[in-house]
Image (cartoon, rainbow, N blue to C red; front, side):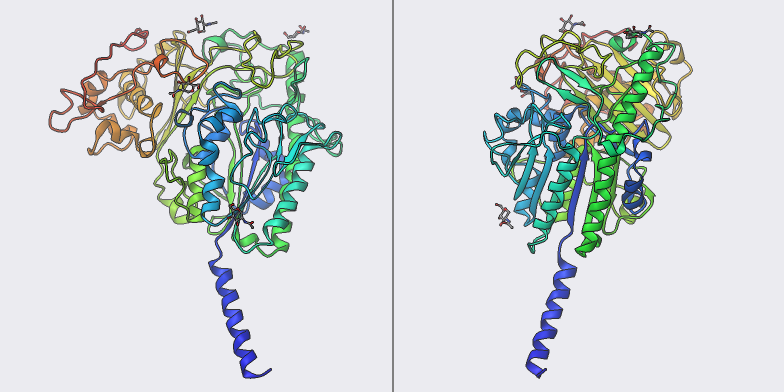
Length: 603
Ligand SMILES: *[C@@H]1O[C@H](CO)[C@@H](O)[C@H](O)[C@H]1NC(C)=O
Ligand SMILES: *[C@@H]1O[C@H](CO)[C@@H](O)[C@H](O)[C@H]1NC(C)=O
Ligand SMILES: *[C@@H]1O[C@H](CO)[C@@H](O)[C@H](O)[C@H]1NC(C)=O
Ligand SMILES: *[C@@H]1O[C@H](CO)[C@@H](O)[C@H](O)[C@H]1NC(C)=O
């Protein structure tokens, strides 16, 4: 070797070394469907445990902000609250892929921002609802260098998938197990991604462990279908018999309280329903191991973040509910999130509260991307490193919202033979079995020494649970059966009435917050003053200020985000000079609002 080639070789090696160290990390994002935290589904995924949970950080206070697929996924992939995107349902007019397109979001969302940041982007599996064999090219989904989407109305048929690859006409995978098909596509995209120099994002969204749904009449919401190789598993599994499991006393909001207690036949069916879900997740578990092996073989495992989460949670028998989601209770909104990757502590449990709104901002930060040029995102990056986790900048609240129906699944969910009249595009209006008035706003607040849930329903019903004392949300302090508990209630030395006035005002801000406000809602109430959390807001100095706030309320139950039905929109703002004596509206106008909702709970 002469000196020239030696120098060239050394220069080449140096460049390679530099490229290796400066190459931005890849992101693999696995998004399951309807996976629960509270029935311990993660405990039944040994490979996820081994490769991701033990090697990464478990975010044990992670929430979806809308507990149903499409709005939740739009929230996740835009970093914006559902009330910001106005994609609030599964179907048009209020939701689904057509609404996502109509709101201009297809032009301005996560994969587009990642491409702008120099990432190659890939996605396979389910994207949104009402993304169908009819509209997949109208227009095609923007932002992916490679994509292969499951399409409606077959998305939830585990053995009858239709998929479109990069906009080509849908291909049938009849007879093949959908979760395995999606895994194969993911491996293919991984190979494709690693042909290029740029870092990549790969989204993988298998349909497990959603119910097997046949939309073609007669409509059926069956148990999840699993691969034959997993049929023998979990024969002894039972849903945890905790306090809210098919309780002897009714619980929940008005329509939930009316549900009859479930008999043994139904309970047995429900246990098997959950076993089927766990079995369907085994194909995902196997995929996790295969992905890890492939990343390792390619030498990029250490420079790749792996996110594992789901769109929303799931309940089966809790509060006597049939299988399903769409509720504000912990089973539906508190969901798994695990992250492994560069700088993320292994075998760690995070403790911080976070939501799906935060995940796009988190990945944009990893990618060094500025995100959207047009809109401010409502989320905030979650702490990833040991240092960030030690002093998290994240808040103590999550804003949860819902519009429309609750839909019982499974054979006792009474969907039975009711045909869906016009799919896609239906709004379930002919389905009496669905609960129409399921529109609500929820605040979850988890801080030092408190853990609260507060919900205001379009029906006028309200719920308040202290989960430190009542982790299964059985004693709604705002229901007459439990109201006697109010008088002895204390939090940080303050009475129930005082706590309630603060949390209602917090929800007032969160239900229509935008951008930074969603992260720092107390600033909207207190301006530059020192109040940054619930505990500080509880100071008696502010009692009159909070007594005078407008309250969260609805004038009617609507199936979508119709502002006119959603009561007052603005809070009074603390005025440091006047000490809140003459509250000023955030718009600078005096409040003209009169509280018209039920008041007996309040005074
Ligand atoms: C991926 O798509 C972006 C945006 O169209 C493009 O700039 C980039 O070159 C593509 N990457 C590859 C490897 O084709
Ligand atoms: C149990 O409840 C289901 C659903 O209401 C009903 O169809 C069934 O007949 C009941 N079984 C018994 C044994 O009562
Ligand atoms: C649902 O809400 C609508 C509009 O507020 C109301 O007219 C209707 O009575 C409600 N239905 C039930 C079953 O509560
Ligand atoms: C949300 O979308 C619906 C359906 O297009 C529309 O009627 C409603 O006014 C929108 N809400 C807001 C707040 O813009």
